[in-house]
Length: 428
Image (tube, rainbow, N blue to C red):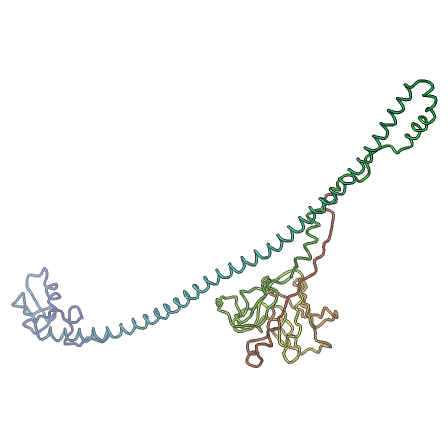
């Protein structure tokens, strides 16, 4: 703040005069300052020279007052200019923050819309999957009920045929019994005449097989009900598949197109997707949905005829991939990449599939060709961070050199064969 000129400064308060008055000794004071110094005194005297003032209400100096007001106005304008500058700078900061907040709000709005789109798409996929399962179960149910009905019809028909044969046998036996009884009541001459034939008929009947319920006459319930759910589940293995790594669409670059089952990706037109913290925006990459920091894990990536790719594991997202990537790269030749090095590889054949084996506990990451059972490269490292499966069409700079069609061949995580291991339940 600018200093006060001496001729405008009150000797009592050291400030600019307010309503300045002049004493007979020519000393000047603020009227309030002078009256305050005289309060309680019998004789008014000058606070500076102690000369007695003949007037207890000295006159106000209009000229001095005008000079003081002009000084205060000028100083106020100068101070106001400095304050306005500070306020403008603070206002600019607020405006910048407001713009940032509005941009974030717009991003939130687009994210909200995308959440709705994601939910609807996922809902459709779930319904389609369950529709297939329902159709399979309905067909399986109908097939098993049809087999039951066919067995029922066959065994009922067989039982009816045997009942008819037994009825004929009973009728024949009844006729024989009645004929024999009639012979027993006949006159002696007649009896003796037909005796031989009657004895032969009676003696022949015991030679017939005694009637009994045939083996296998009943419904084979054990065949229809035994391990029913398990047997259906075994058949369902042909309908469903298990993929050890599921790609996370929330990490995929906006120009990636993921398959509906989230197991493969290819290049495509840029999509309007939220710029969420997990999403790659410079690297043409995508991560697996699950990261690993313990245990052993294995998955196969089908690379086929793709000319430019990276396959491996990563701890990084967004930018600076090299600081957290371990894997195999194909770009003008094969290379083994780690955060600290990139080593050229010489392969005898171009692998169509690359198998990734991650053993977090032993600190080993291996790459091999499963078709020839050939080891490509092994990294030894203590993986302290959670490692995510990673696949990429290299970086976006590829697009500036190669046409988009070159990355439309998909990279795919292959399903694994599901095996059933039957064991005794504990305690049985």
